[in-house]
Length: 168
Image (tube, rainbow, N blue to C red; front, side, top):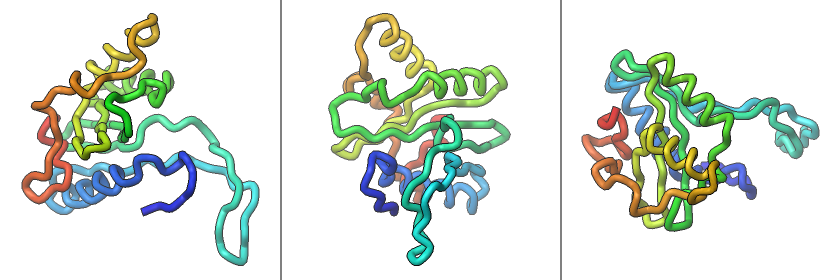
């Protein structure tokens, strides 16, 4: 697990669970899904400790994960929130644009959203887009916990820490 004392590793607990699940999906032949890393350009490096001390992002990130399962391309982002809703300010327009273009090519897009109490939900792109568009036109700026579909609650099943592929 990362220990960067910054906003940069928010969601790292959720990402660890996803990475463990993805490793099992790969070993069991259920899917090939990998973390997409955002390219950085180091500015300052502490050579004695082999640590980058200052850097900048080379480009905007799109989504956290991409892969394929049963011949279906998929991409998704992982979000954690300490609130009783998912703030839409944590989702950027270039991410929405990317997922929309990905879906037009036959891909499946979604979010995995983890709330403080531990509940993780599969949020289909169409649902995300509905709330996103409403927020852009003066509507609510978050998705309330009660609006998440309880039938899309991601659980530890079949030995997968977060068995999200069942919703694809």
